[in-house]
Amino acid sequence: MPSLGKWRTLPLIAPSVLSLLVWMVVPLTMTLWFSFQRYQLLAPQNRGFNGGINYAYLITDPALSTALFNTILLLGSVLTITVVLGLTMAVLFSQDFSGRSVARILVISPFFVMPTVSALIWKNMLMHPVNGLFAFLGGLVGMAPVDWFGDWPMASIIIIVSWQWVPFALLIFLTALQSVDRQQKEAAYLDGAGSFAVFFHVILPHLKRAIAMVVMIEMIFFLTIFAEIFVTTSGGPGLATTNLAFLIYIKSMLEFDVGVGSAGGVLAIILANIVAVFLIRTVARTLDA
Image 1: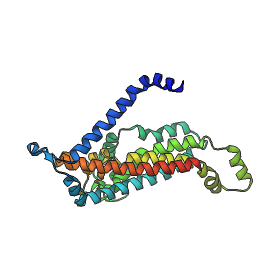
Image 2 (image 1 turned 90 degrees about the vertical axis):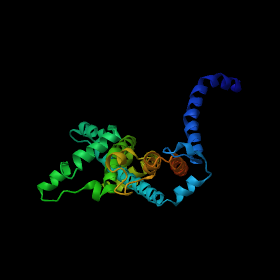
Image 3 (image 1 turned 30 degrees about the vertical axis):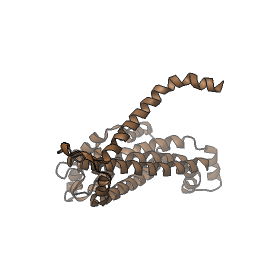
């Protein structure tokens, strides 16, 4: 009878499964195909199979190592900032104070701003060296204006992306804090533990799973950061803010080399899967602990 039940449910789930497979398999297959093709959009008549030349060219390109380093730097910096700030703010906002509901809404609101809009706000309204808010505030105390995207390009991208994703970490941590056993906290205080001791020995171990989930989700998204770079620095100055996703865009759409761009896409898929396997194992160990 169980087998009969499976056959009865198969027509119901088959459309969704097939749609998901088509949605995933078709782009992946096309990317693999083009990665072994000589396909220049400026000379489509010269299209043909070229073996692994695209991969060899990409791997020996100095821009790839720079892009990988920038990807790791961006990923590590934003992860650290979002987890630390999100955790700190979650602990603060879990306390009772006047206007807490309004403050929570204001703090969480950046997460609902589109990345392109967020980047434009930071570029034109906050970090602009002439008309930006930071330049105005610095001028009030006699500071020279800072060309953020010229002098500190990567730091600027890190700030923008962190501003967008700190609310996400805050939401997850706030939700997890709601389930902290109050009796356990009260018992720790009665035993003479201070606020820091309660945080590190009671609250932080309880948030271990929430932290693992935030890290896993954010790492997947941060590997493909594109809009913020495209709107603000266009990967520059030079390659200072070019990550792997933007390098693929440069090869495919600016240099019109679909073959090399597809090879970069395959490398990005391999990197994402390596990270995903590592994260899944880490989260599994955390959940089992």
